[in-house]
Image 1: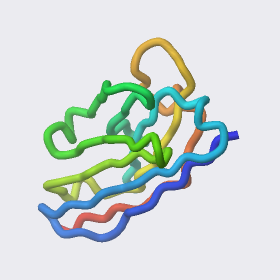
Image 2 (image 1 turned 180 degrees about the vertical axis):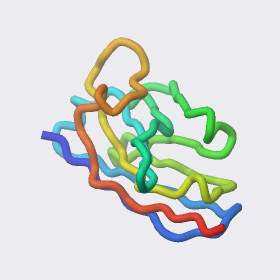
Image 3 (image 1 turned 30 degrees about the horizontal axis):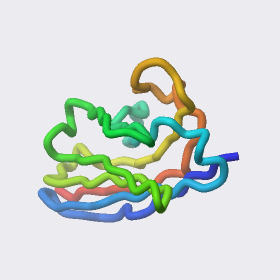
Image 4 (image 1 turned 45 degrees about the vertical axis):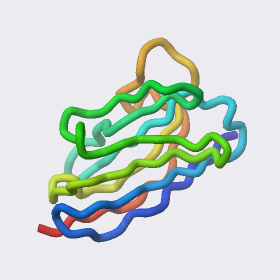
Length: 125
């Protein structure tokens, strides 16, 4: 029904920048909120950022506020995550997710209906 594909991951040095992309296809009208999550080895998946697909509202985890920016390009059905001032703690597999309309701003994986396969981001110390 909905397919999400992430790209843009890679290796970057501390303080560097990286931009991730998430391309959506299929029934994209089903997606109301797009979110980014990350998971480091041995740790739980954590919320990073979210954006209303057809709106301007954005939400960020405290750990990335001021450094990461989530944006969208509806013409391309793509959501981006611009990451600046990267730190080793930002290392992990970053996954994009789509949520159908629901009350509030979803921050947990359970609230999202569609998932990409993830892209690795490694920040060298």
